[in-house]
Image 1: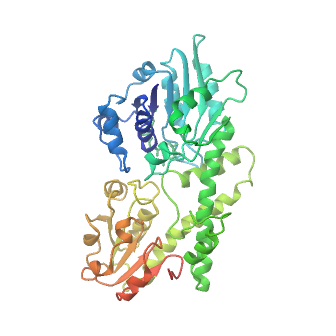
Image 2: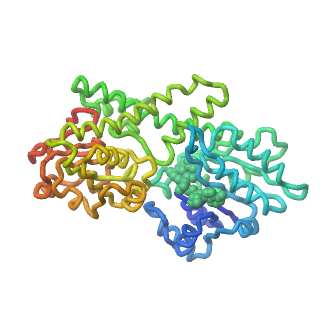
Image 3: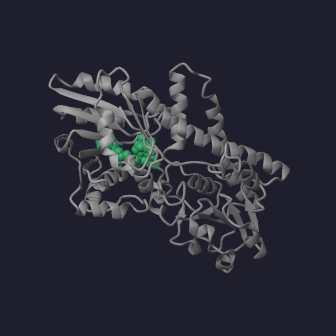
Length: 444
Ligand code: NAD
């Protein structure tokens, strides 16, 4: 099948390559000419495990190409995925849907005949209905454009795996449509995946939009729940990691997303829960999602708690102290630094007068662009040179497996702060280090 994917960022570039891997003839479209130039020669403009091979293989097989041209997209075929960004509004909590509107407007201006647009971006409930009305107002009698919404659940770091082997596929269509071709077309696009038994949930637009934002709100709540419990654990000297193991054995609760520490960040959870609250307010449901304000507040408090912990355990004043920050990405296996707790902590420590040196295996370039006042090292060993405190802020495997003896001869003080509760405390303590975990004692 001939497909276009509009917006070639983390979601879109992965989606385009995965659709080509399924055997479709795919054209990726983006307004960023530099990104398109790199993708066209098989270069992934961000770090995502496995994506580079997939991209090159499908470009070489002639199933995948990229362009900045909307007329080319309109000519390529009749099925168009939309994966452009929906960031937080510059002045408000709501989602900025102007990129989605611009992409749809531009595309529709070039379409003739029958087309299907499948939205994948995360949007506030009601967006698809508004967009369909917008599309209908811009098309004439010989053009029919149907809109479906199929939210994306991929995780950065596992994006290829999640796209090719999703937990479920969700598709929402116009509940008032007389006849919809969308479900049958989407069924055909994903046939290979659906044949493996992946649940296929077909519903109306509003439900599909809400599935995505509800899923993210639930995940964010689970993280903030355990972080709130960790605040209590700190007061009474209890171990939140053991507690999470114990409650996680209850399969009604489950252990995943119960890791206390510096909280969530990235380009999705923080802005998605805010957009969800803002949309509920617009709909008059003012108190309904009030608890998400608390989820957000608990999450942001973790960053300040990490800064304060580093300051407290540092054996000299922050002014004049060297702090090594291990990790800049919002999570391991990603170079994404959007709303990264690690960088927020690094930035706050620098503002308090510390000399902060950051190392991240993949995210240093993105981090440097966002926080030019920080120092960046090209290895963990360089970052910790003469450090008064070593702070682990992203749980990259190389930090988790790092041994104290590697760092011993390099640091000024043997003090380590585990912002992700991902280290083995007894190993550090046995080597004569002062080990501190964010969220209180860690006896694991
Ligand atoms: P991104 O910023 O990496 O990519 C967005 C891309 O859209 C950019 O390359 C940008 O140049 C392009 N773009 C903007 N306006 C355009 C236009 N008019 N025409 C063509 N291209 C345009 O963002 P992302 O992380 O890929 O997220 C995209 C959407 O997917 C968001 O709604 C996000 O919430 C959602 N989502 C993201 C993830 C994730 O893990 N990144 C997971 C699930 C859902």
